[in-house]
Image 1 (cartoon, rainbow, N blue to C red):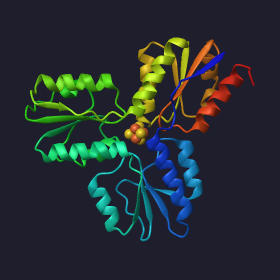
Image 2: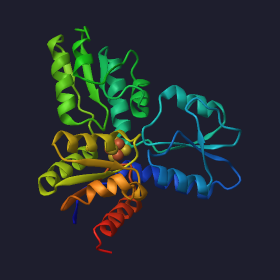
Image 3: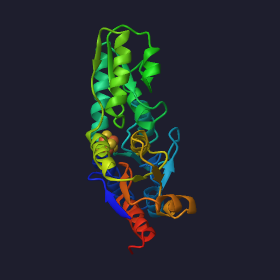
Image 4: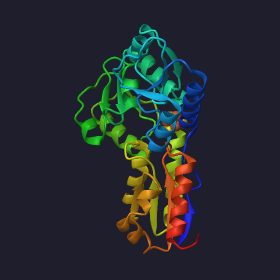
Length: 286
Ligand code: SF4
């Protein structure tokens, strides 16, 4: 068995920055409780490491105790949430990814200009909720079918969740444009997501099967898995190396000669390396 790594995979700059800020915060704030508003990143290895260092989890609608420091994750938050946290007396460490901030500003400026803002994205996803808070009257369109059902024909702007893929956004834009002559498609997809998807597409013809490393609650990891699946490749999404060792997965994978390896933007290097190590053990190369 040969393992072929995608040229680009794992932590993006926004997630790396958020994890570093969270680590620095727990190290600096001894004596004050440090919280993250929701998981800093959709990855259990990182969440466990930060929890061991003392970072506590605050529910999205939770109120921190007096004197707390709260880290805002890379998805960002709606302005009301930030106000509520500040009003509670918490100090804020804002790890919102600069690319998400750019989308928030875009949504706010188009809404302020009187345009209806549509977001191509997953309903209920943290980033989509944060973006929605910056543009009153936002409509979330997860797919082409829901876009076709939108009857709005006034001035409109479509902004994508950063982890959408271009084909999905193009489909949604075309469906919205059927009922709307004044639609601005303002972008929004993050290059980091596109780079990981392009690297996977480049890898697919070179391998017989694919392993994608990342949490099941990571939207961009699930999209990588979907891309491999749509290309007709046998694909396994695993959260960690132990999942490779499960009898059914190991048995299936050992049938293939060349295995491709990729990982979502929320997957740390240590998880990727551990999975590669376990695959090499499976191949008898360790
Ligand atoms: S995928 Fe892009 S937008 Fe999202 S955190 Fe990473 S760098 Fe930022």
